[in-house]
Image (spheres, one colour):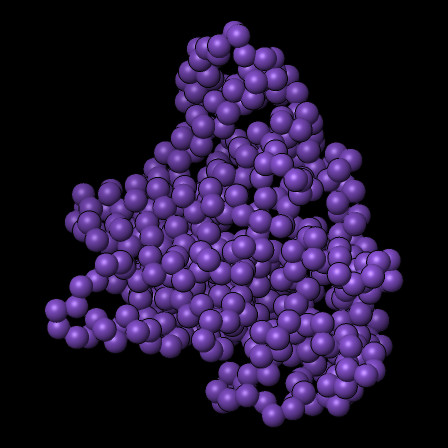
Length: 476
């Protein structure tokens, strides 16, 4: 493929021309912010972002600020991604490929992408994704339910069998986060391209070759074609900024999970730190460990505070080390990235697998198998399965008139679905008009409607609705 160019990669066009685009065409217009800063400003106060405060990162939500939520995680990724964009931009300024304004644009683009990268995560985190996938795999294997609702193509089935919060992201910011119309937050094409981590469809050759990850649903296929045309990308080729976004996410969550695990008492830090030092003896790691070992803590602090100070020092220094490594990897393989031939899936993938070790040996063994995380997943399993049973079956088994009649069970269930999800389901994006009745909804539309509603729930809302549907409590 042809070499990618930043003039296209930083495309500021949108599905619907914004007021800013119209104003910019007028002479003497003062531009206070670039278009990617505008993307950030229009989403930061949205309900989709606010919901992240009630979604667990690893440990169950608590009434104090003890551990991180999806919101605090996303804020940290946003800040670090912005810094990565600025660091890369400054280096590209030295080559003449960037100027100061372009660096600002890349930094703002990554700040926005970092904030929204987890919007599509369902309640109960990655385990919630697993429950949704398993439910649909069983549903499609049984086939009895589908006989009542219509026919699905291979891609349409795969969209749900391989459901992923990253893919749901695109639906949220282009449709479900309703602002003025069916175009959602109406982001720039560059921002949308950056959040597509796996730029291929669910029945593409990559999925058939064993990769269950994909980047967009069949329903968003036409939009992705527009995004790719505007940015100069194509299926299988990531936006270069996506590599920086992924690196920021990896740096933040692996170090933060360690800190939270130590706070909770699941990681015995002194013991784990010694194991890490024995495992990694390369010079750059030895220098890092020497700096850490030389840091002194105030002896008047409590033992618990000293332990936290040490793990925070580890977190900060490791993030700084990984930051430099990500920038060096990006610049060292810049031409491969810009030509779409970069072979690694992540900038921080390395022969020594430092991050993989931290994920598997430190947090994986100590945190993800602990009682409260397993209990949260068991709750999530019961809750999400029940919600899918109720809403998917009701939508498929009921006709349009029954769904509209609140005097009967299907109508009561349908009335619980948020109005913005119904609004999006009823919009015909191909012909740019609204469907006239619920009977026009296809089986695929109905499945999306149910999953949009359920995956958009916070942890506590999902549990509360589960209790209501099971008669465990009276509605509040």
